Image 1 (tube, rainbow, N blue to C red):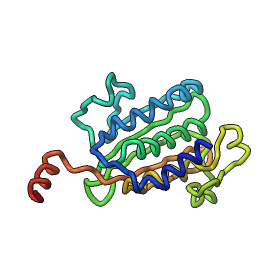
Image 2: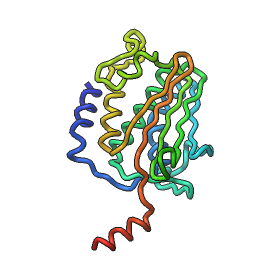
Image 3: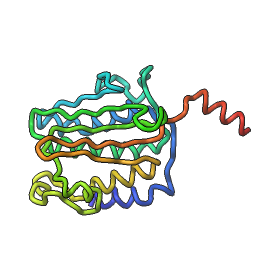
Length: 204
């Protein structure tokens, strides 16, 4: 029921989105922290990096922390956090104990330096190639028996895709059975605060 409510919210979110300038590191840390109990119960290590450089997962007052390397996006906070949180949750649920789930933030992975990628990488069971084209469909489950064990509804990735698209981004997946999965959210990078101020003054 909660998943269906989340899906309904995601589908109607476009009408009520409140886009704001968000720190990607703070956003990702929030998503990780909300999955921390589940990760610890399976002895799964959570790793965070920015452009290949490891960052602390837990920072006091993380929502207000300023990192000079940080990158920013313009998006609705709850909507995009839901997307990242769902991917981290899936990575933990479908990973064996004593493995690692890594969340990497990178800039400039596309045609230029105007895109931010958020990658969630696990060492889990992987997804069969025949299912890769369908995993974002509502109620589609790769392994129904496994989904019963993990409480999967087949809605998590459909919700995630809606959330990402509503924030102007795209989502992609790479996976191989027995080797794990990598989900990548790509979003436009926000302009610097100086550029945004200049743009506002020009249109004023």
